[in-house]
Amino acid sequence: MSTTPTSRLADVVNRHQDELLEEWVQAQQSSVSRRMDLITDVDLVRDSRELLGLLQRALADGDSSGIEGSPWEPVRDFLSGLSRTRAEAGFSPSETAMFVFSLKQPLLVRLSHELADDPQGFIQIVWEMSALLDRLGLLTTEEYQKGRESVIVRQQRDLIELSTPVVKLWDGVVAVPLIGTLDSERTQIVMESLLERIVETNSTMAIIDITGVPTVDTLVAQHLLKTVAAARLMGADCVISGIRPQIAQTIVHLGLTLSEVTTKATMADAIAHALATSGLRIAPAIED
Amino acid sequence: MPETERIPILKMGDLLLVTIQVDMHDRIAMRLQDDLTERIVSDHARGVLIDISSLEIVDSFIGRMLANIAAMSRVLDAQTVVVGMRPAVAITLVELGLSLPDVRTALNVEQGMQLLTEGGKTNGWPHDGRRSS
Amino acid sequence: MADVRAEELDIGESDDVVRVRQAVRDAAVELGFSIVDQTKVVTAASELARNTYTYGGGGHFRMELLNSGSRHGLRLTFEDDGPGIPDIEQALRDGYTTGTGLGMGLGGARRLVNEFHIESNPGSGTRIVATRWR
Image (spheres, chains in turn orange, blue, green):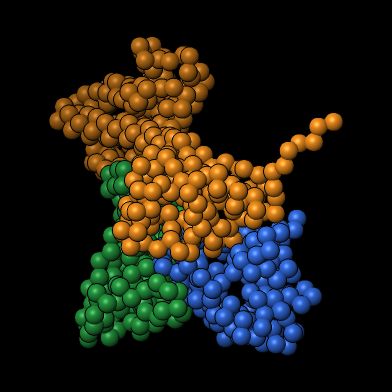
């Protein structure tokens, strides 16, 4: 039997898996960070048993000095999934990391028995074991971070979409009132949102109202033109309304041609245009 | 080159209907162009409807193919309408610089057929202002 | 923990353009790109792969999946030993602005990615590295 720290660690875990599991579970249950409100004993035992089993196999196949290799993939996958599940359940990232760290104590006790007559070896193997569990615990924290990031990104997008709703006026016509400064990212999100709504509602006309947009520079104008071109490729026409006199001047000064785009001074004009093109009109209701 | 590899062209009255569902390699695209041109003549078609609602990617080659088909059909006195372009595809084509100005488009097969049968002149909205529903 | 995986394909016939598209698409999906970003990067790859085949006389494609902490991206490298591009500025400007122009679609592909690097000299082939971040 070879005597690398990894193989000795693997050996100890293998031979004492049941006792380790029992002691580890007990340590978790009696700890201050035991969250009985968030996880049942049954699940706690199940998670612990699974990690211990995966750990034992990884140690048998691999090297305890690094967890990036393929023998450690099942452990990494398990911990990633666990971190996500626990975060969703309401565990703090520290609490989830403690799940891993709390295995150190029972392992320490076990190792001190096994290596009672080899103090040098004991120190070495304890160091390896501790570093290994540190890395695994940190993995759960990193996974938590990633999860938070993606929530934030999603919320940002939702916020932008909510602040620029695409409204269906009537069958075949949607309108989007743009309000505020249009930066590149926001414009792209609005553009995508508008085009998606066109498909969803089967609309052949979209009114883009820019009354609420304070400045139109080349970039904004380009984005608008791209949106119009994309909508046309899909089979819908766009009308840009709310072009204030200053914006009209800016457009001319910038040398931009909106010649292929239908433009209207006000939203009302755009609606009138949409009505006419749909072959509809608004008439007084007939009273009995 | 396998002879059977081509995109099927359906005849519906005096219209030809093509549904592109595969990620085409260049050969199939060229063959479609040739096949359509032949069929417009042999079937006396006055309209071609190309359904690209399944296409996740339209690059410049396919874009030019669509423009070519539209141009060639016009020469043969037929109209071509491309329907169902996905938003992501439309955005990408515009970014590529391909806005296909001479290709008529519609949201779906139904609206495309309306365009072809009514002989309308604009994208989706016939010039006389009436939209039949 | 930084993580880089790579995939390589030879571009020797026109069917390889489709293979490149599919490889890029699978990778973009795996990295969690949005639908629009997937479409952009796959389309860019298609343009560049086709160039390698048509103008470069065939060549090599390499794709790296970049995964480091919060940054996720795809780095695409296209290399050929073809005649090279005499005037890169011109090639980048020529595009499909009217929808009928010929030209190499380089400018278009550049607009679809975040980072674009090109080395090309007549007689020594072409190397293009395009990167799209999620």
